[in-house]
Image 1 (tube, rainbow, N blue to C red):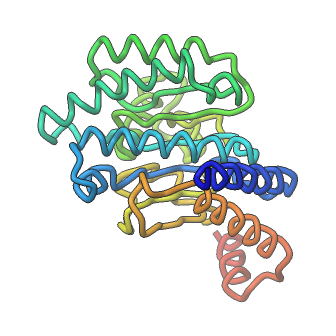
Image 2: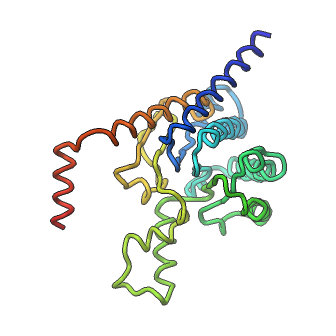
Image 3: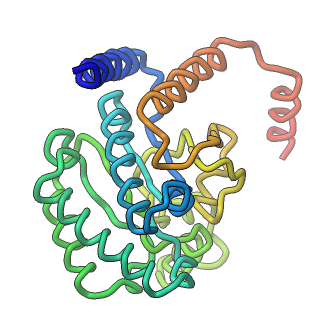
Length: 274
């Protein structure tokens, strides 16, 4: 009974926080997640690595629910790096099997697509995936393509360098462009995230303070707030996420109301000089 009471209060608190944020007009439109620590969590709990990834998926679902309830437009999650293919065949097969199950679950029973009207996109070099997983991905993307409330980008298999290479190759293969008129804007328009809101917030768990080849181009903007969290991804719950969203809202309010600093003025002068 005590646990039920705690869960009930937790849901009430989460709903209150999400509603407060949704009317604040200070919610990040696009959040990126480096969901790090699933394997270390499994080792810590004396589980198989597959169970750690399953715990990570459950954590992702809870976090995304809060984000979409608060008014976030786009979430991009780093699910599987191209470099992860170097792991043991057993672990790679387990992750791919879990991905097939969870993508099918999102399509058929998941509340993300139905309750929140989320369009599911799998981005990256999907040609590296097996045909069964590709079939699940294509079915899910097709079924949710008309959802317009929000977007979930699942990066799998992905690296930021490959995304930039893919954009450049796409541009160079297009006869309407020449090497002389290629610009940053054109490269941006051919990234996997083209047409979506710019990245506002990047979160990485596990206490590691590096980007690990995730959204390298998008993170270069000075407007991106980066949060490195010292806990493993399965331990990262809605309340920690709510605190980060509240901090983002405070930072946005503070930044919009403050006077330009000397550094800002120096940077603006340099831009004008250029």
